[in-house]
Image (cartoon, rainbow, N blue to C red; front, side, top):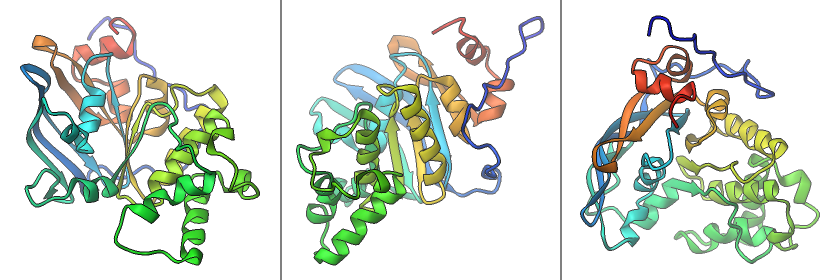
Length: 284
């Protein structure tokens, strides 16, 4: 890379950087992906993806459109189970246990690995009922009204939304702003106490202020959860993540992993020239 412009680690904006980052070398693996390939019929969407996600980390996935980032995220949530033409090969482990095992209930697995989508998707219900939904209908435990109230308050508090909505919990969720709706969706996801939260470009439809609220929230939630985020915003990846994976479109338009490593290392000293070309804007 001699003669190329020096890469600058993107500014961290308003996100606090005095919080100690995880020790990648000593952190245990929460998610372990081994030789993962996803096909839709004859089309190979992902080919041979292998990576590990440390526990209690924010793990960012970046890359150009069509490189399979969202497909990878959906494979971690077993969303391809609902697509008849989809075939998933390889291994995905959660705490060392295969999530695609024959004896694994995908509904139970999705409670352990929650999902937050690109655009806020609150149910056509009240703010309270959105957060309580998974608690009421997704598990074996029957919650008392007191337990349910406490769980809803706890989830909204963790999502930094409680103080804004505590006096109107019965109002329609759609009455909230876009940023509030996305935090409500995060509250709904964490109410069932997952172990991993997947976020597919969770701030791409939000204004800059709402985006920073979501980023701040991710750095707070990582104390309790492991977070995997897909983002097109490289400065966002630099601000919030501990580890970053760069993906690109390979042979036959299949998504492939180029490299993965600690975020600061990947942005300042990428090992693969394709990574440098992408983060400096020479390819996209």
